[in-house]
Amino acid sequence: MSKTVLVTGASSGIGKATAIYLAQNGYNVYGAARRMEMLQALQVYGIKPITLDVTKDESIVACVAQTGNIDILINSAGLGSYGALEDVPLSEAKNQMEINLFSVARLIQLVLPNMRKNKYGKIVNISSVGGKVGLPMGVWYHASKFAIEGMSDCLRNEVRQFGIDVIVIEPGGTKSEMTGIGGKELMRVSGNTAYKGLANSLLKMYDDMEKNSVEAVVIAKLIKKGIEATHPKTRYIGGAMAKPMLFMRKILPDKLFDKMLMSQMK
Ligand code: NDP
Image (cartoon, rainbow, N blue to C red):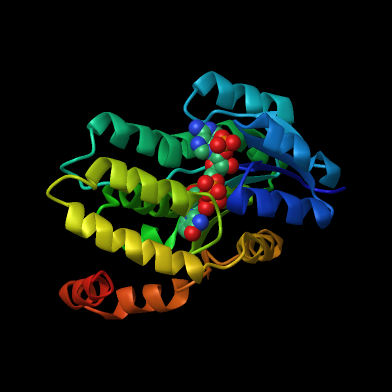
């Protein structure tokens, strides 16, 4: 019997590409997000749309209740909140953590009882190269992704005993709505403050990165590889600049890495 997958963030970018790719490969796919009209367009692939607002607990609970028995959870809903730490109101920081971290934990809590009962489950958390590398002006985005990395490491060793795998995906530049939205947010928050010079440099770097971004299906293929592996790796890396960035982060001391990073923002 085909496995049942719940993909959050299925209305756009990586979540959308993953939902389509898995449906095309025989999975029973539920696609969840807020924009129902975008999800309804995916019904041609056999994807079942579900409304989900990850900032609302009742919406998360209703989403999981509607899907029933989830074998594979793919947490792709996410937001890139940008701006200097000094400029970002903590209410926005909390919203970022709610969307990128706590909602992921809540969804996992709700799917685990069935996965434990079935002695089978795959939990795929979309982190980022930004879960290992922190860029200036992205403090809450990176904090949320570093937290996803840590949470996934802890969870992996809690649930392995039940036959459940936890897989982290670390994409680099990937075509989606995110970079456009993040850039606008960055300029709105820090485009006219003491950090405007850095904000402009960063925006330029993001624009350059966007030009080299890979199609989201590249990440979808990586996810499929992870969920179909008998012994999945803990992390899968893909997308523009992902491997070289993570390699440099691993081998360079902090200050040398900072120097290399900041030299890209001139
Ligand atoms: P997109 O902006 O294209 O997609 C984000 C998705 O999240 C949308 O489907 C959106 O749906 C959903 N979403 C946002 N807020 C909510 C909410 N409150 N409730 C429910 N769904 C929500 O971005 P990506 O596809 O790029 O992002 C997917 C993941 O990949 C994110 O976690 C991101 O951090 C990560 N990533 C992306 C990279 C890239 O270069 N694109 C690089 C590294 C990591 P809707 O608005 O309809 O609710």
